[in-house]
Image 1: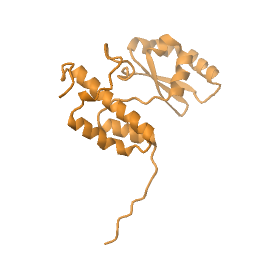
Image 2: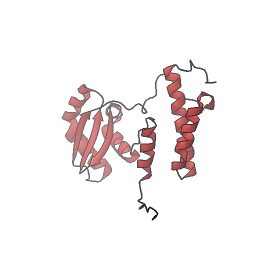
Image 3: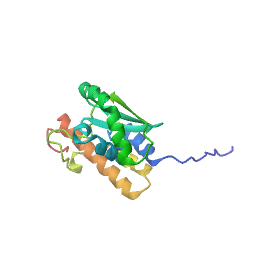
Length: 172
């Protein structure tokens, strides 16, 4: 029998990481920091607190707005915001802005009392440890692997604390 040959194709690390976290139901929002900084500078702190830039596609900047009132208001400010973006970036890649209603990202604002979730291995069950160990070999970079490991531990701990499953105590 002839051995199977697989064609190797390169994949973006961001896509692999996003799929792995999605598969294990870990909410992580990967934002383009440059896009976020550009929007924050052009919109100002009050508008930026009520919005989140999603992407730029074919010259259109897509923005999620967290309330219908702000969505309507930003419709009136579209041209002014577009002018600020073009002047602050010096780039004419953005030709239009599209606003749509969206929800605030869970990772953007931690729940009350959960600003700092401890990196405490005592909250992990055996199946959690196995899941983490099974996911980590997919990440080749040791530094990134450690970041993913800590993120998974903190997310599991956060969920246990929020769900009240552990009643605030570590799992035995």
